[in-house]
Amino acid sequence: MSLSQQEQDAQDLKKLGYAQELFRDMGGFSNFAISFSIISILTGATQLYGYGLQHGGPFQITVGWIIVSIFTMTVALSMAELASAYPTAGALYHWASFLGGRTLGWFTAMFNTIGQFAILAGIDYGLTLFLISILEITPTPIQTMGIYASLLLSHSILNHIGIHVVAMLNNFSAWYHIAVVFLLLGALAYAGFNQPIEFLTTFHNTDGYDPKYSFLVGLLLAQWTLTGYDASAHVSEETVNPRKTAPWGIFLAVVISVVFGFLMLAAVTLTITDLSAAAALGDGAFVPLLKARLGEMGTAITWLIAGAMWLCGLSAMTSASRMVYAFARDGGLPFSHIWAKIEPKHRTPANAIWGLCALALLLGLSVEAYSAVVSIAVIALYISYGLPIAARLYSRFIVKKDEVGPWNLGSFSTPVALVAIVWIAFISVIFVLPPNDKAGLYIGGCVALLLVIWFLIARRKFKGPRYHV
Image 1 (cartoon, one colour):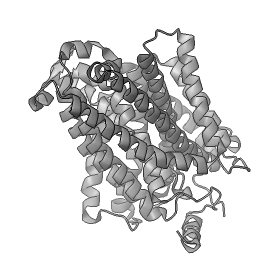
Image 2 (tube, helix red, strand yellow):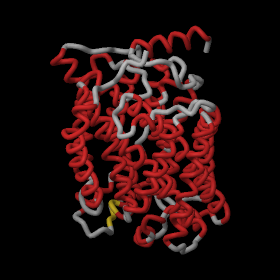
Image 3 (cartoon, one colour):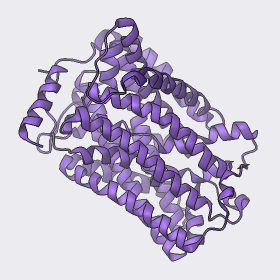
Image 4 (cartoon, one colour):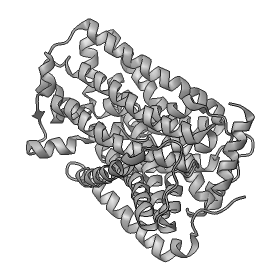
């Protein structure tokens, strides 16, 4: 884009109270690519594939995917509207603050921060387990954490180097994901399927729960995959023409992920010969199923999928560090002056990057059940998605104030937002039920701690978004 467009972007940011500090160099495709890479159907859908088999089988993997996709789209559309109206690196935190006040903004930011490092932990810990499955080894706990720490370290170093490197890898990641999915679909189609298409509607659960309950908790498979698309909004201050580019990035990332994710899951499921045996494989079901059907080609594809997961973790670190930087810039975090510091040579929020690396490592050490880590990430992030959406409805109908960007839903905005809020409330309940009740303890503990911090400390010190120009 021309320099005049970048000047206009800086002027828009100035109206919201912020100077242009981050390097604005990302185009439309780069903005889409970061959300598409964090959603990463080759990450979430493969890491929890065995979980889906246990909680509903083929019916969960296909029908459950469709149900979650429909409701997730209402959340994504509402967020895209807000991204168009308020294009800042703080994204959700700023939206909630502008529309609902500093208290709502603070809680939104804290939930998003918790979700950001939890999703980073979920991606990299899931990749650790995936690599162990490919290698067919039984590592010690120390070796497992060594692999996990190495993955976090690689993502932190590259994000520290600068947005140029990360943007190039994000662009590559989007094409890489699409190419690997096509390769997987082509290889499975060539090898042939073991089941008729009707098999995809077969309900089968091995978790010991009532079928209806089992299906509901199994929706975590799809919802974990379709998470993280707020990344396009978080890099708004590094994106050219973000009022239009960021909303399209969010929308297209979700739509393309929904379509390709369904095709991939359906194809893999149709290769199953013995459903009970496949479900018995547990969380690591995806790799042996692929190897059994495709042989050496299956092994090669699993390594390519591992590469997609690594790229997903890289994008997750980028998004998370921008959120932490933006919140710390306004004094919302303990020791904010540290996390808000921009590394002068590369112009990246280096301290935020390394702080997130440490927190993700601690979460991986403290939570044993992988699905519980995933639940924490999903619930915390979706609460942070829902609060600014609710704040906009409050501002629209009670305060009679509503900023509308060039990308909007018009008369459909309100009903779509209402459905999104109901869905977020629904999943926030079902994903803390057994077998993910440990996630409920962590979320409950976080809520209690946040209330204590707010009333004892933050309420007096935190003033909301600050003008920096």
